[in-house]
Length: 112
Image (cartoon, rainbow, N blue to C red; front, side):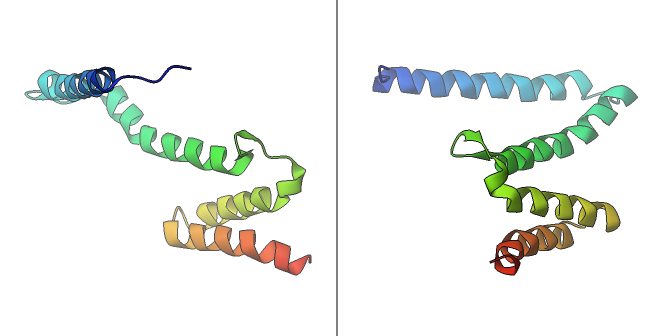
């Protein structure tokens, strides 16, 4: 694998900056004087929870770039308890995180 030169690295950064600016401007330019369609509004509201779920799932199911086996059962238990806590509290983030963290650190203590 070859490394990028300084010029190539800055070219990539500049192209990414221009690309993300164009994406952001496209929403401002398209919807500045009119409302967003209802279907797009629903999609955008669901995007953040979907991204968060993907991040959480990957951190539960992956260890060191590989799928976590059943030797990491405490992760799965904490995720399940966190899911139940989120459903029971209608998405209260502090209770959900607290229940998941308590389960993640409590299960090995209970079974050791």
